[in-house]
Image (cartoon, rainbow, N blue to C red):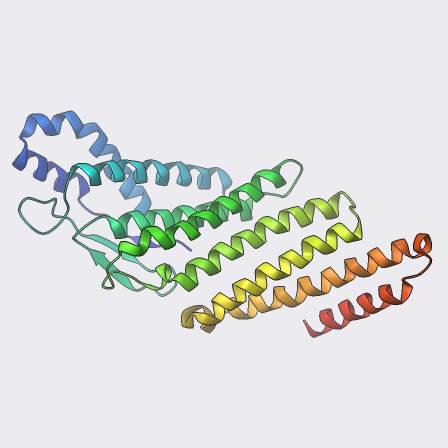
Length: 283
């Protein structure tokens, strides 16, 4: 889910500020760049969740370009309600709760919201890219980049005032999403191992790690009243149990495959397989 915003008169606000403080000639020098930022901002306001990978890649490029441009603007101009500032309101709605927050003092809410949507776009790109051939590696990398961004926003959102902070920027939510991205990246390794018929030992190790990621995500989910109320907690708990079962299944396969060579181990194989079956039945 993306954070939602609405169209704002970015071009007019910056033009008014520059002309008033530096003169029209100075504005003409930066006019093309401001027009480009206004166009990108309008496109961001109309963003929707799509399953078209090419569209998602365009979203990613646009968000990065806008973030870089506005970061530069932030260094050059001051935003606020006083006459010597760029007078502009940046409205954003929380991706889950829909709660609307507006900042008129700086670009912290704007820039962090852009980063949040960028992480969401990277997730959606990974989700909608078929896990075939070499694409598995690039998809895994995309999930890792998204995980890093959600974790990074913990630091960049520190400067947000309480009046503009919503559920999206809570530590629990950011860490939940970061951990889920790592789980999805790990799933790519599992898919590759399964496709290549790797040993039960390798598959068991990968799925144990998958279970661990979902266990960590469940912890953050429980700590968030908003996440715990929705289907996120039930869904996360499902995957904890599911990958625990799959890990025991592959562990059982490992003992079974090595039983003849090692002269024993079928009892351990049976134990792991029975446990896997019991977990799957519970799931």
